[in-house]
Length: 186
Image 1 (cartoon, helix red, strand yellow):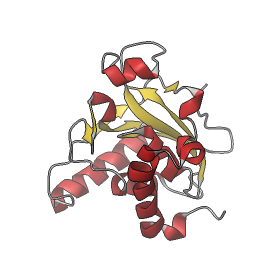
Image 2 (image 1 turned 90 degrees about the horizontal axis):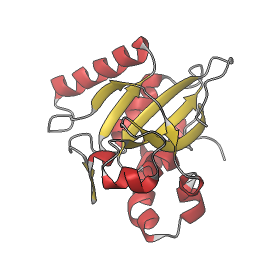
Image 3 (image 1 turned 30 degrees about the vertical axis):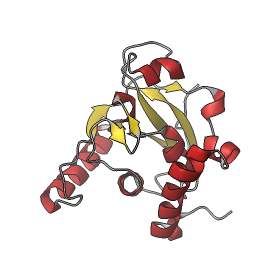
């Protein structure tokens, strides 16, 4: 199972920026995003499970794979949200989540996505946007493995859990403040 771009002109975006629960909660509310699946990519182990990914032994990153409608939201707009909700200057770390599985990464699905992401990274470097070098990797999309069912819609199903309250919720609040006009109408 993976998020599929369909014949209606939808595209895929695959992004890693720390814990996938944070990214999923935000992108689930973004206009133009049709679906979000938490999963793993970028490693060497076939069909990894959460424990293998968390150990760092599989080489995978926690990611989200989005199916989006480019007529409603651009790839660049997706990347702008991505960079606003995680710290792209910390290597293999987001807050207290430490390890290669939490790396900042863009897995591009087309030469156009590669060019757009590279241009944005160049803009950040030229402007010193984050006050430190951006360590986000830009890599061709490979095999995507959906995470276990209990990881899907994690924040929606576990909003009172402490990690969700102290880590996910603040990112969602930041997104809602910065991108209010781009939120799905609920």
